Amino acid sequence: MDLTIRIAGEAGQGVQTTGNLLAGAFARVGLHVFATQSYMSRIRGGLNWFDVRVGDNEMFSGKEKADVLVALNSDVLDPLRHEVTGRGVVLLDGAGSDGVISIELSKTAKQLTGSAQMANTVAAGAIFNLLGCGLDELCDYLSVQFEKKGEQVVEGNILCARRGAELAALIPALDDAPKSSGAPGTVYNGSQAVGLAAATAGVKLVASYPMTPATGTFTVFAGLADEYGIVVEQAEDEIAAINMVCGATYAGVPAMTTTSGGGFALMCEGLSLAGMMELPVFVLLAQRPGPATGLPTRTGQEDLGFAVHAGHGEFPRALFAPGTPQQAYELTRRAIETAHKFQTPAILLIDQFLADVQKNAPPLDTSLRPVDRHILAEPPDDYVRYAVTPSGISPRALPGTGPFVVCDSDEHTEDGHITEDLNVRMRLQDKRLAKIEGLIAEAMPPEHYGPSGAGTLLVAWGSTYGPCREAVDILNAEGKSAAMVHFAQVWPLAVRAVRSLLREGEAKRVITVEGNATGQFASILRASGALDEHESILRYDGMPFTGEGIAARVAQ
Image (cartoon, rainbow, N blue to C red; front, side, top):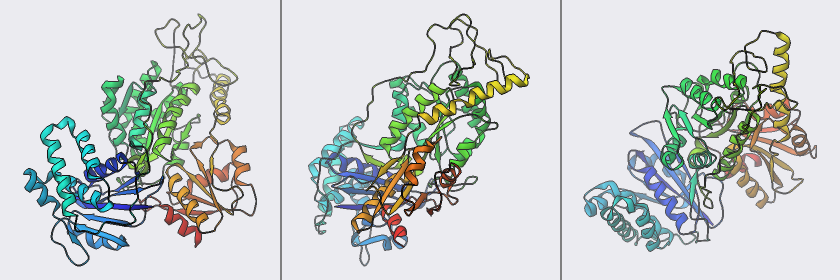
């Protein structure tokens, strides 16, 4: 059993604050939570909403319609009223109208505290009452959340929550509301998971220029900087940011940058520099719809092809694309480890949906566990930086540790000096590209979910994991036969394993699901020979997929 609460209003009205409060509080009482956001690129005004889906079982996707709509102003009623389920309840902060329940959130907060700022807590109390959740548990959560702001703030929030519950007492409670099922009490979004994983992996420099939706992760690093000893530098632009990362990794410092599509475009020359100098550069690429500025606060999977081919010349790179905050935590570490082991760039692809989505997870490990940087402890006297090896991976020493470490952005000899000897060029380029075989050998196989031999196979990558997984459950519950394969590593691919998986049973209906207009991952699969005849479900309006939406399109 589950239901969705939608908090809607304009930017500046506390939509996000209310949503975050509800997500954390519901998790605290043992409910499963899956929270998503939709917001315009405006500082004030516009139509924004925050969906908090709560249930007694784990959830992986948002829903199309809300069961409870909390309208922070009357302007949201026309666009969103039709997106409330038949059993739904509409609460309006202010004077009501037909089919709408008036509940004075702002006025109540101002009467109780002298300010309307705690209207979100009044709303939380009302919603807890509607769902039949214990108000004492909400108050305990508020005490913890606002403890650092002082006793007066804590008492004000508790007072507002209790009054909100009283205001909602006359509203019939939702009989089929989910009940506590012992879900993990901690909630993470994708931005938090990436930041924490990189910090615990030993990243010591984050150089970035703010760009939505990567700014959330950059902000997380600012909060973790003191605890983990990280230098967080807002560079003057993305070109400076990637070059700072190149300089830091040359000196042996684990470093990374966060950006989105437009910023990544400016980083391409620096990425190529890392390819030539064989530097373990790590890039978080948080996607949004383009081209150009596009829809800066919406979601999309439009940068995959760009990330695979970004930069001039040819050099190896590894691309990972997590599907949940938990995967984002795990794959961030794996990407950093891969970059250092193979001395080549690694890119983590997320998007606005995954950056912002909140989901229960057991507490993530916060202990500092630096990755192996694969640096020689005692370099030999005859050390050369780019020694040719069968694997393509050369021994790595740091400047100032004994031997003379020479690097060059031009083509160079094994000892790092510039050269125009064409035979040397061939040998060193072959050395660099030899790493691809090692990357393929260690590539993550796709995850299979659902019955084997299913009649319909959904092919997902990155953040489409959750919606596709829920679509599989919906379709199988309806008596259809469906399964899913999800790719968390999208480049390079373990081609043989992928071919056998996707070609198992020639009559199978294969449907690729992507958040772009051209089927970019399907193109990669076709080029590898892993995918032949298939259908596509594509979405590129800037909104995320839902499980029920995918299931409906499969059934058409």
